[in-house]
Length: 124
Image (spheres, rainbow, N blue to C red):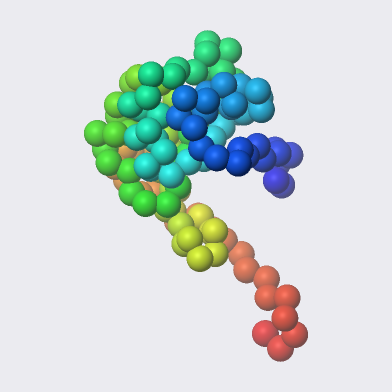
């Protein structure tokens, strides 16, 4: 939220409605689990041309994404995927593959994302 973005969430995931909902929210990027990426890949719904112009990338969060799945998703849906891996318990992003072409490596978990921590409890 630091860079001025605002979240858009639905009460329940629907592979059929995902792209329509992303367009209604004026999404410029999206973050989903690797399982959701598979659902979007094998669903018949496609993003509109307008959405494809607006969305810069998708982020795969949580578990590792199969190289075959990432390659097929990017080929079929025309969005680069940035693979990130973090700690579910803290919702912290620990590793992130760069989004820039030529730097991003499919199948690579990514570089360490520098984090800072602030303890708010007295005595730490």
